[in-house]
Every structure is written in C-alpha cells, then in structure tokens.
Length: 446
Image (tube, rainbow, N blue to C red; front, side, top):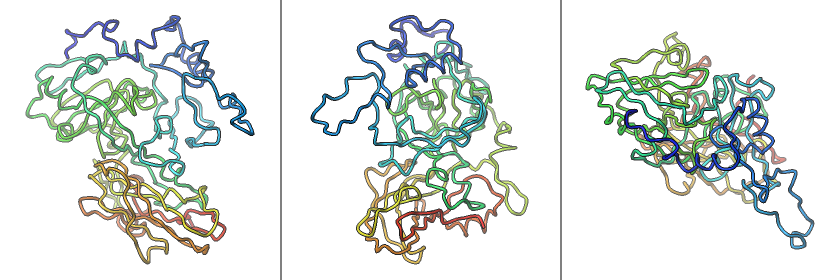
C-alpha cells in the first residue's frame, strides 16, 4: 500500500496497539532508561516499547509472590493475573554470554534446549543475537521504504502490512555461528544450551515478499535486494530475488503475538532455512538491484575461510543437524533402567527424512521416531527408547534430510573446513554418559 493511501493509525491501529492506549496516557516523556526500569518493575510487561497499564484488580505477580503450601487442597489458589507464570518448580531460562556487559553491546542469549520438549520455542526463551542492543521502535513512526529497481518506490506503515494478505508458517531460525565451539573443541561442562542454543523455532505470521514485489512492480533485470534494519548497527544483507519469490516474508507476529522487540518489532524479514544474520530485524528499507551489495556483514563477516586460504561467500542454507537434548550435560539420568533419548533435528534444505541414534560411540546406529508433523525448514523432535545398563556410554545422533544429505562427523567436517572455520558447524555432537548418570561434552579441546 503506497504512502499516499496510508490509513489513519488512530482508526486502523491493530488491536494490540489499541490495548496499549487504554488507561492513563503513558505515551509522554518515557525515556529509554525509564522504560527499562519500569518494565523490570512490572515483570517485564510491555507493549510496543511502552509499559502496559496494570489493573488494580489483577496485579502482575512475580515468582516471589507464589506460596506453595504443604497441602495444596488446604488453601485457595492464586488469583488471576495479567501474565501467566511458569510453575516455581520449572527453571528454564536463557544463558547470557556476558551478563555483565553494558546495555547496547553485541551479545547472545542461548535457548535452554535441554529443558524444552516439542519443537516450538516459547517466545521469551527464543535465542537472541544483537550487534547493538535491542531497538525499541514506535510503530506509529516506523516506515518500511521499498525502492531501487522497481516501477514505483513505496513506503509502508505497519498498518499497511496488516491489511495485506498474510501467511503462517513454523520455521526455525539459527545463528550461523551456532555450535561454533565444535570446530576447536570445547569444555567438558559445555551443555546443549551453551553449544547449540542459538537455534529456536516459532510460528511466524506475516506478508509474503511476493506481495511486496507485485505491489512495487519489480524490474525484470533486478536479481538482488538489500535489506536494512533500524537498529544502531544498521544491519544490512543482500538476498537473491529468487529466494524472496520462493518463500521469504515479512513477519509481524510470532507465536500468536506481535513480534517482541528482541526479535525485531514491529517487523522483520524471515528467510526460511537460511542463516539468522540475513533475517533482518527492525526492518526499515529494501532496495532492489542487479548485483549483491557487498555489505560489511557479507564480506568482512559471515564468510567462510577454507584451509587453502580461499573464502566461501553467500553460504545461505543451514545444513542438516541434530542434537540430543535429554539426556545431556546438566540433564543426566538417575540410574540404570528404561529411558527415552530425546532431541531435535533440522535442515535448511527441507524436511528431515531420518534421525539415527548411537549409544556406543557410533559403532552401531538405530532409527529414532520422529514426533508430530515433520515440516520443511522446521525442527522436528525425535525419541529413542533405550535401556541403560549403568555403564559408561557415548551418545550421538545423526540426521538425514530429504535431499539425501547426511550429517557428518566432526572429524569429516574438520577434514574439509579446518579448525579456522567459524560458521555453519553441523558436525555430530557426542555426549559422554558416566556411570553416575552425569554427562559431559565429548569434544574437549586438548
């Protein structure tokens, strides 16, 4: 929808924005620091970068407010609250790479893979990767500009996109640096979270890029597009038009709610199966051209140096991969007996066709069961029933995708890439199970 026909935001605001406008007027003079302090005091409740008004009848509760009686039938349960809380006995939380770093610096948070089941990651546990902190953007002021090799350059508001045809898909997003500790090795106490936690899966809802391309009228000579974010890092990446027409879209919702600020609110690019850095958050500009734009993020960074000195550029798809999440370090076994080995597998090239599990250091392999609907470019959960005899064991999983690609061993991957490689690690993960039921990382840097 062109800017000339932009609807009145006060009239056409989506429901979640209307909700944020009820109660006292919180839109005036709230500084970034004040916002963060207020949000923390209210249990982190906010809409659109503004504090959501709290009701006197339904106060926001914290874990400290929860009282667990010895006999739960002897006391009334907790009252209603604006936000549901997890049980005080559940402690899933993200791992921060540097919790003492000042606000706004580059950083990561890792999803607690060992504490999750199924495939969808709760939005508040989705991994994060920021190059200049989390941008807080007012959707009433935000614009997406589309220009370059098009018939008519246009500008879109959030409400323009809300009125366009949308699609819903479940896809994983994985940082291209996920699991990079596998190249040099790691520490014995590394976990599924600390090594592989830069992957998460969500239901994304948004506008297919095909709709945008049709609306602006793409020049037939245009083969690339530059996507630019509105964060302080001004993240930019080049994307082939072929991918945009195939399955790319601009996401507005994640897991049933507006995308959270850390995931790019009010809008972000989703490129199913491709490395996370390309899926620009806080999207503000798309420029079409006839060649890649050779930005810093695709020349100096996110290229792959090979042992012979050459560099691989534009390595988009995340290759077939799997990891056992239970048991794993920090999530051990209580003793010998019947257990279920559980984990996730995924491939940026399509569906996972098969997952095999080995409990004897790769000497023998058995097929695991894939749970639920096996979707393309999504994680899939696998289960394998196992009778543990209480002796030392080495656990591994191996994924095969629908193209026939088989997840390689770490040794095979290093033979091709060397230890100087950084991105796209997908070697088989080894966990060493000890007789006391604890586990450790099988790839320890000597």
